[in-house]
Image 1: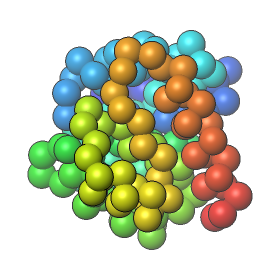
Image 2: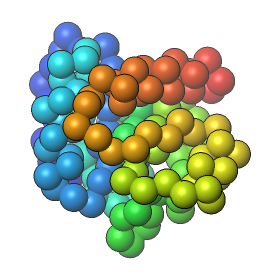
Image 3: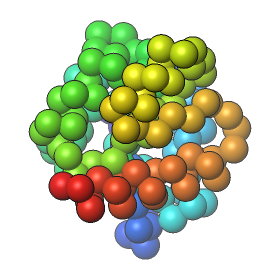
Length: 134
């Protein structure tokens, strides 16, 4: 877990969960240009739950394939314990099972790319939907 951005002007507080440090860094740098402050980072589902318990988070960028506790395993706990937090699944590969499972869980799914704009839009929408449904 790393130190949060100190972007008081950002409207959305996001946790980036990915086991690859380079991906977390790229997301941190890319999202700050979209009115988003990365307030925490996590390398697995256990760290996701710890960050969510420690500080306010509006939305999570969630890699599905992480060690120890993966995205599939942490999603039910997040939906139960933190229904006000929006989740966007962010993965390099998404076959039919992954697409069906994310649709069933009502979680937006984006494939990893170098463009932060679609991810930023999905995070804002997911956060708004979670707040409305909490």
